[in-house]
Amino acid sequence: MKYCLVFLCLLGGFGWTWGQNANVYTPTAENLKNREEFRDARFGMFIHWGIYSMLGSGEWVLEQKGLNEKEYQKLAAGFYPSRFNAEEWVAIAQQAGMKYICFTSRHHDGFSMFATHQSDYNIVDATPFGRDVVKELAEACQKAGIKLFFYYSHLDWHHPDYFPLGRTGHKTGREAKGNWENYLKFTDAQLTELLTNYGPIGGIWFDGWWDKKDAPWRLEEQYALIHRLQPACLIGNNHHQAPKSGEDFQMFERDLPGQNTAGYSGESEIGTLPLETCETMNRTWGYNLQDHNFKSTEALIRYLVKAAGNNSNLLLNVGPRPNGEIPEESVKRLQEVGEWMKVYGNTIYGTRAGLIAPHHWGVTTQKGNILYVHILDAQDNVLYLPLQGVKVKKASVYKNGKPVIFRQDKDGVTLKLQEIPTDIDYVVEMLL
Image (tube, rainbow, N blue to C red; front, side):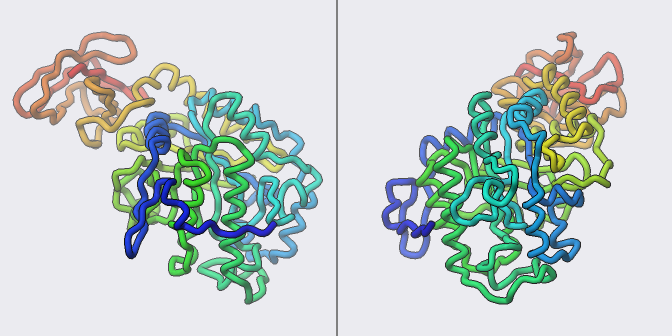
């Protein structure tokens, strides 16, 4: 199918105004509403799944193993996920307390997990399975009232027009030729399909721009197209830099906002947009049959709490097996997180970072005049909180409502707990 780029001069009524040298993005009311709902959600499920799962070595196997791309393509002919059930996936997410799902519609290997007319290298045309899993997932999400986001890779190790190559893809036998303009038309056409054929979409989660930082990506034009098709749709880009014009939320890979332990956030100054951090349960995003180094449920809960205390969502990943099942290790941990969220979810959902910045002992979240003090690492039963100029009316243990003794002076508040906290997250609720 041929697709022509929409001239941006026609987009003035869709949230874009024009200056002499640059576009100025003005989000619509629907978009701003979706941003706040995104902030309120606080917890989502990331799903990395594609034909790479058949090799059981993660989603980067084509590049990391230096496989021949033409041979890799043949995996599609054997891809038959007989255990795939979109409603089961959604149920697992909801039981965990997750409010949205982000699914890999197309990863770096270039294989599309939806019924695209731009290439026959997709799950409907190239596999014996022949089903549009994105359509089934979209319908299941809509039925359950959970928002669906699409991960979409700018980087492509398969498409012949992704040329010249960037930092990656040099070991896969690709021909050294291609037409970049055709590639941009291809990606815009696919995004149009994703935003036209699958109902309301919560957002587009881009990745791979970093492979060719200096390429003429024309992101603002692409972002304008997305906002024209679905004004409420949020756009985020995992480019590891400060937010660019047209983006609606800022993401951090394997790090909380302001940190750079994974080495991906060196240029990512925290902006004013909604924030999200994404993390794996084990070490890889896609299914890896040798990776059983799963984080404990306690560690996952504490990371979720820290994310909320840093004013960020947590997008927690699962990597389904090639048969479509989510591994038992992931399901078990998600069920346990869900049980915790049934008790403590009110201290996470709909909150913003609290008045007290993150400390070594934990974080705070807040709703209006209610401050939740999340004590994750207590040294004793006395805790000082630097709350200047704020009057505390009441303090109690969140899980049982027992009063907490506190003393307030002009510099802050000292809590005296009845015991040294040993809970995964000992929460004190304070009425301000």
